[in-house]
Length: 328
Image (cartoon, rainbow, N blue to C red; front, side, top):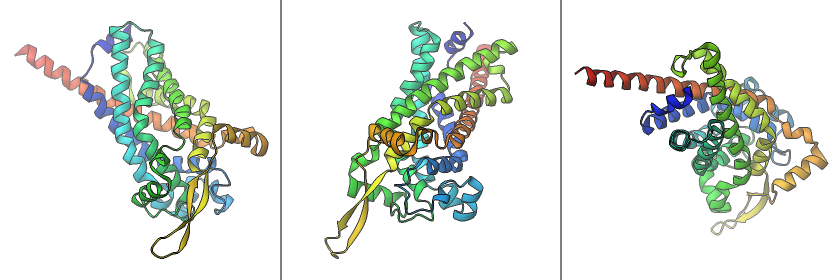
């Protein structure tokens, strides 16, 4: 098959790591404002009870006007970037390695391979991106106007306070819910992406390397958008688990002053689903579906377009080098 023939002509693994890392960082940076809006729409009222309800539903332009770029659009960006590069490198290296190993060396079914490799890549990279995701969602909710919600003054301050008052386990709060969302998302996204590329090549009678920019962007957007829509309820549960907080009183041993300190609530997936059913309605589980679908489709489109563009350039250079070696 054409896909198998392409896989046998592989670049060194570090090429995929570089291309994936660059694609992931650029896409996450560009789409961060929309991610901030989605996170706020998905948070529970208990978590943001000190924030005007209207501010939860601001679209990006209103967030920019009221809170500015750094504390509004790009609240939590430092945490997002901290996890974006290493997690993208881990994901794509795992994904591409498994594609070659399973399809070429073991003859495993292509569709199953794409699905499994996407799932496995996300599982490996989750060790890095989950802590950054926890920090990012908290800083996004806090923003500029709600500084008292968590009381963080910076990413460094957030890491210090979480470690001191909540323990290291807080950085993986909602880990199971994050995997519940991200494993199926990545599995579906990359299975659809690979199949849509094959279908496009079949319809246009092109090879993968001959697909143009418009086709690459459309394929990535379609795969990401569908995956984002299907997994929106899981994304809402994840956001609630990572941001639902209760307040405890901490007394300073030196000054004797007492201050409120946020602590993770005792909620789990079951209690959150029960709350949706009894209090908020099940439709709330699709809160932020618009921003999520838009984010996942555009982010996927940008990331995978950059990824493929860099790989095509590397493959072309590699072919030129091999040609010169043969000619000499």
